[in-house]
Length: 173
Image (tube, rainbow, N blue to C red; front, side):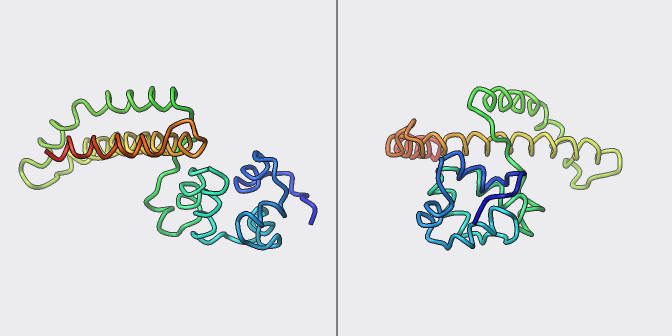
């Protein structure tokens, strides 16, 4: 079928970035051309397994975050949309988020020292939570960036995983 939709969905855009025909992509994904067309034209919501496969085949781990933050009933409530940014931008925003957290420990201890949250502490608590959520989003952005670099062969998966396990062991001590 001909692609007629002018606005591109993320699923269509990722396939086109690869320069693949719908037929070729459907074959690689193990789904029918018709199903892929429906997904790409937002006539059918992909199931989570479809998205995992697309993410792997298209080497686009951000598809999982997109699906969870936009299409999943639970994800829309709890999964923030992670910005699709390159490493330098992620690092700068991550460092800014870390800087913003410098006084949160004191604020949280003061709020909870009496084991209750009174009306005068709600604003500080909300600000602390928001700041920590922004830090979390940038950590997720870094993770997606690393996964994308591994998928594209810019970072060795084996070397990265070994280094990560080593870091885990150092932290566990």
